[in-house]
Image (cartoon, rainbow, N blue to C red; front, side):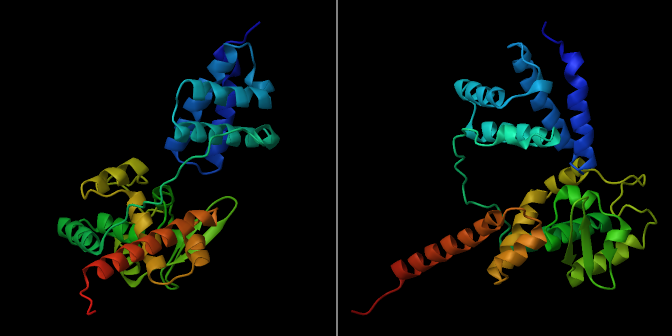
Length: 281
């Protein structure tokens, strides 16, 4: 007899609790839960129990998504969620060797130009909100993710050593603070006594959504500031391994995208110079 959704939901909820322990953001957990519930419903329609998941069930679902003409990116993301779920079940082998169409990834990276960079700092300073200025400097000058920014505690900031530490369960990384980021952090932290570094007007830890909403006023996103940090380091001859470590990339190939962007930009600049430079024959 086919189980009802409510009978297997606890397993997905336990998975979500595990994700929370892994310091995944609320939005990420919400997405994982939604996609797994869709998968669970699909399995139930075929009298299959998610608790007895088999590799063929995962591959069949991928074929089904392809038949539904879902985008390659969507299918890849769904497979990633199921892969994480299999890891939680301690059955990672369930997702080994899955047939997936390769995702065509663009090397285009959205970063701030020098003009945009200077304008952003000018605009946020003119608003005269110390917390927001500090947030922009920290995101721009450390490249941390918005989730990492919101999880910062005072203990993660060492102003004497000019260091910021991103602490996770299984790892940590230390990022040097620029003089500007350090100075604004010093002034801002002296203005409140909460353990969380960035707080709301009511003293609550700032949410990712609140940071995103604030940055939207300046037509930027946390990801764009993170990209700008990485690209600027690469442009200033910092080696890929160092940038990868500072950014917390688990795959160094992610960092190498910034090198490709730099190389492509130089090729275009060289081509323009070559095309429009008068040559004496």
